[in-house]
Length: 280
Image (cartoon, rainbow, N blue to C red; front, top):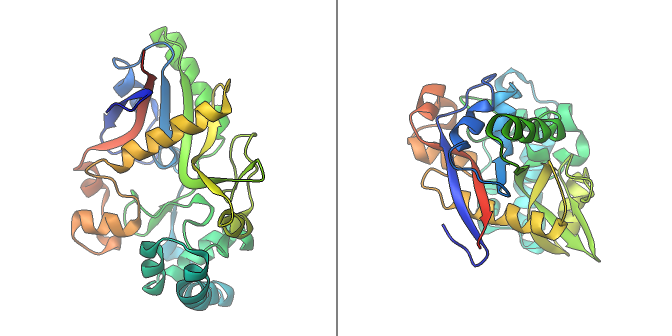
């Protein structure tokens, strides 16, 4: 794929299983990388590689979690706040049709990230319901800064190539009054993070800059990093097997969401990363 400024090269792998080293991404990219490239990695494959999976079926919803799923998200967001604040029609539709399992999901959000993230109607705290088997969800990667530094170091040492490595989350970074912020619990230092519900609402009055970089091995130009993150995210969303939401995953395999297995996920091609290269 070519844009006006960049060339995008997909890095394709099989399904990265829980606790499988993320070196598989490096191995798949090694013959494609050049000095000066940007290796942009999605957060979910790294989180799964780290074993950051939680089985939501093991959680008993509290009264608060039940209220957040059955009333707050489904009705207040689905019929009142969502339309008023202009959130996506697809998101509104999904909220109005939230299944009972959403109660356990809210309980997971409350336990791991707290109320300010659970108040968000969807994509709470970057917890990913797609690309995980059964009732499992993936949390955000642990120590993303350490991960990008490790990958960049391995590429430099083993391949002799100097590249910039970043991890991005599809949850938005917003700009308002010249300040960048995100609802996510973490982001690069140049983006104010951990605003949860409040950041999501405030973002309705700002400008969406694109997906959120959680960590970058080297930052020389913040605007360039944000632009490259958006180029990478746009490319991945065009992928034939893109499963942006848990509903997309169910449609891909034509079955109930909790019936998706590791074997099914392993049966399709995955694109955990892309290489973004400046055009000469």
